[in-house]
Image (cartoon, rainbow, N blue to C red; front, side, top):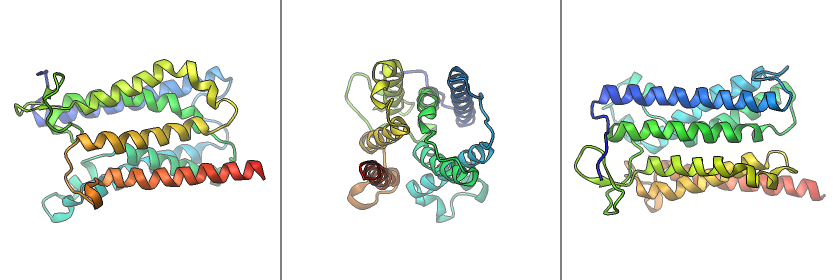
Length: 250
């Protein structure tokens, strides 16, 4: 299978960034709509400024840190300083860093309530749009898959049919979005459980799907930096869930 992929690197990066900002904007719109539907403020509430700042800074820092872990070869001197700071991103790092930033912001603002469930649909909406941009960028983006003989393999411009792993994630996020009204009641009585379940599910998804992506630098057992991050974060979240459960039953 072949498809229309943007071969010019500059144009590919431009389109990629355009879809990234579209994903962020869509997430904000969905978040605002959900809050207004709940009779709450759209984007800001009293005391939430630190939370918003924490999310933005944490997401940006996590984004880069996990990318650096996944691609340590950028430190060998072949990449210029500004390119190290500006090039490369990680959705896993952005989500985890944003979560940590929100928790720090909540601590500063004295907010103790679970707020993560409000981000589930915005995150899924952003993933759907963002991964389309990754797909269009083709070989100019590091999210394409390894070669495959399956009939839906995509030629990203090098004559080799590959797994369209970007579309796999896009379709999965879209499936959860469409079916969300049918099973969101499972989480209704436990604030924060929907968000943490989304994070656990996404970490397991990335741990699995990244076996279908080329690995620039392999760690233990051939795992990529992103996969190692997913494993560590998975056990931290599970431990947190167990701890919260033990507090409820005490």
